[in-house]
Length: 256
Ligand SMILES: Nc1ncnc2c1ncn2[C@@H]1O[C@H](COP(=O)(O)OP(=O)(O)O)[C@@H](O)[C@H]1O
Ligand SMILES: [Mg+2]
Image (cartoon, rainbow, N blue to C red; front, side):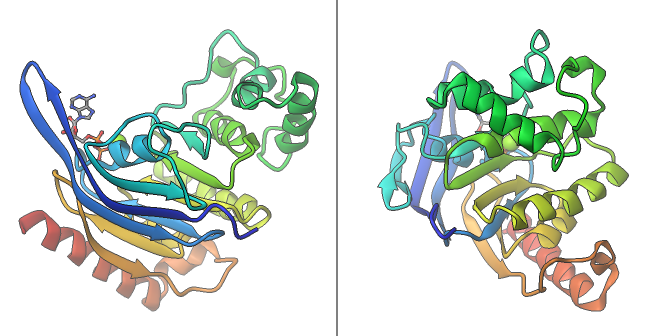
């Protein structure tokens, strides 16, 4: 699948409130070819979630262009599958009913959404938990369920906002290998947000570095490693060297 290409040009946004203006984005440019996995890393508060909310069509920027598959997404939700930073599982819906939530809104029939969701419970490591309540799931399982719901949406591009942010380091590493596998089976365009440089390098074809607020892109780093990547790749000399390069780009952006 090669659809779902993302193009962003000159995005600017300022939030205005009682406490004054906060400029979040200052001319963000980004191109993600269809079918590739791209990640944006940047310090807390630099505007990463703001960028994703604009791409999801939920926030209208002050200026700039953003398209998916060549069609504008400005003020046009539904052209992507968006997973917000908080997992937003509904505690009063069982796992299967949480999984189908977005698909029903996207116009897939209830029966078809349930059938497609059931088929994903096994690859998402949730087999047997269809009837569980969110409170009965571990943190990793909750995130996989929120990701399952996102993958179920009929969109060529997935927008994932720090999907593993709340997990411990060991669970995160398991989730990285698992996400690589489900992504390889699917190959839709992904734009992932994280502040974890190792996560970014392990999963991505390209890593873009954002400056502190107001955010703009200060580096685009291609990640050349063949897939599937082994968990042990993170200690290889080439990986460690690229990690050092990325950390240097983040540090340079922070002081610049
Ligand atoms: N709705 C809002 N109103 C006012 N300021 C906001 C709003 N949303 C985000 N901001 C501010 O914009 C900046 C960027 O926020 P955000 O995009 O959430 O950053 P990140 O995801 O990189 O941590 C922060 O300073 C944040 O406080
Ligand atoms: Mg954020």
